Each structure stands twice: as structure tokens, then as C-alpha cells.
Length: 246
Image 1 (cartoon, rainbow, N blue to C red):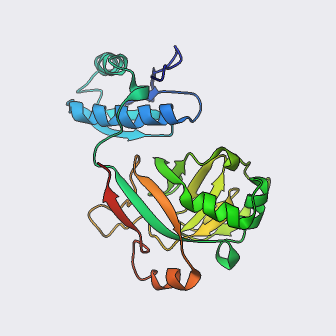
Image 2 (cartoon, one colour):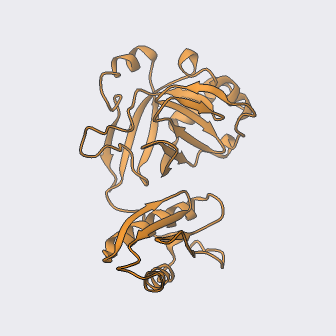
């Protein structure tokens, strides 16, 4: 059993219409598990006046209508729910999916694999094996619509971000640092190291479910070659497939 530190979970006001429920002051697997599980439980309560919930790496946020659900009432409800069990050992939400996303590692498409591998104490071949074998969880979405932070990677990948920004990585770039992946939903500058390239489109506003990956989903970035990846670019999912985790 995982025992939380005494100050967590911590319930705090987040503006006039929000509460932030934190399960840690730094990322860990138990804190992320707790945030995901607590959000699912909060959604299941179906309280009138709750307008929105979301989760971060270690916290859950709830937005409410203070005219319908006064601060004192919602805070008491949330604190009772938070104290009702050990969320650090809670089961992850149902309906999660396991995605396999084709990825080109290194070469012209992902030019920083070599320097990231060196930082991790590996050859490029060892790095590709390590990264493509890893099965990671979508810990949170952020920065751009549908963009996931994924982890945790093996300890060797607890490498720092770069001291200087890469001017721009393309949409679908897979970058690594601090024992995490980030999969870029848009082209943008980054201090993370560009080790892989996918053809996936993470945000598809024209479909019923526009954000492709959900917090709690699991992902494996399967190695492929550049020619195969190019053939997948006509597929909005970039050749990615998934199955429901049972």
C-alpha cells in the first residue's frame, strides 16, 4: 500500500469558482494515479452545480457555479470525498486505452536522438530499444490542445532539458527529458530533445471526440521507418491503433 504524506490530499480555492485538489508537490506515479482516480470519482458523483473537472500531473481541478453550489458546501463535499479512501492506491479509471503509435527514431526526422542517448548513457540503438519498449501513461494534457505528457520512462531517461531552445519541432514530434515524453500537437519551440517523429494528429476539431488521447491512456511508441511513416500521413491517426484496457 502507498501511504501519502500527511499534508496530501490538499484542497485549496482556485479563484471564485474553482477548487484544486492536490496529491503531491512533485510528479510521482502514485500522485498521478490519485489525481486521475479522484477526478473519475468526482465525475461519478454527479453533483449539481459542478460545471467542469480536469486533471494535471498531480492534481484535480473542479469548476463550479458558486450561486448554485456555495464555496463552503462544495469544499466540504470535496474534502469528505478526498478523505474517504487512499487515492494513491486507487484503481485507474475504466475505459482507458492502450495505443500503439508508429514512430521514426533518429535520422533527419528526429535529429536529437544521439545527444539524448548520450545523456542517458546509451548508444543510439540501445536508446531506440529502450524508448520503443516503454509503455507509458498519459499523465496530463497541456500546452496545446490534446498534447500529452507521458511517463514515467526508465530512470536512465531522467535527463535535463536543454539549456537553449530548439527553434521549432514539427507537429507529431516525440521529445524527451526528465523521465517523460511529450508528444507535440503543434509545431513549436522546445527545450526538450527531439528523439522521434510520428504522423499522428492529436487534435481533430471536426470529429465528435476532437482530442485523441485521454489522461490515463497508455501508449507505446513502436519503431517504424521513414517510408512507412510517410504512407501513414494520410491517416489522421498517423497509423496509430488502440485496444481497450481491461
